[in-house]
Amino acid sequence: MTPHPAPQSRGVALFDLDGTLVDTTYLHTLAWWQALRRHGHTVPMVRIHRAIGMGSDRLLDAVLGPDRETGEDEALSDAHGTLYATWYDSLQPFEGAAALLRATAARGWRVVLASSASEEEVAAVRARLDADDVIDAATSSADADATKPAPDLVRAALDTVGAEPEEAVFVGDAVWDVEAAARAGVPCVGLLTGGTTRRELEDAGAVLVHDDPLDLLRHIDAGPLARPPAPGGTS
Image (cartoon, rainbow, N blue to C red; front, side):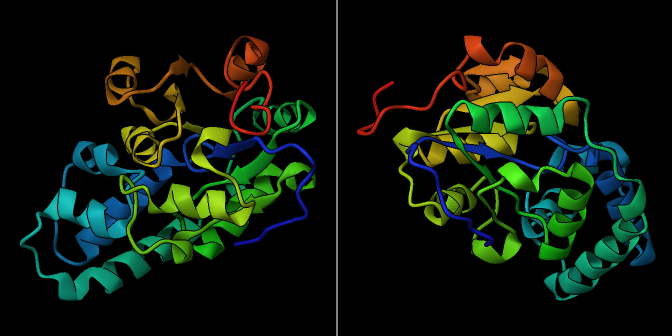
């Protein structure tokens, strides 16, 4: 975790990184596909894509089945990390991503990056995002025992700034983000940037769905990020 001193506002806006603020979902899909092939597993990319946003353990359950040989999990995860790292210098934030974080902070929210990626991957994405001046804290896979859609990562993100669920809003792109936020008692705004449909996000419980960060930014004052809740959890 990388906490910074928090402002007076109690509200906290949690943002997923991969596929939400930075266009990495399909890069992760490709890296996992290549890693699996290196270890003798040919898995359709569509199946991998559907699992992106989970932690690596749950992703491998989803694409290889829970009865797989788990002894190669670490090697598969390491191979994915190595392959994905070749893209670090060309990672591309979505249009409006950094501006959305700054607009959120300007409205009194504490901004926390709630990511389940490795510390190295989070650092690489943050470097490309270039918005550290308004980010109060960030999580990585090291901060939670159970990965999305379990609520542990969301709770860990709240803990970095001492916030309660009723003081928070989560922004994510995957069904797993919405489900993890819901299990932690936090409403989730969904974005279509990860390739998940509006219907899927809404069915999972997203309170609002926008096309991308720029769309959310343009409508920020008409949604739950308009202003943080007052102390005590009331708006």
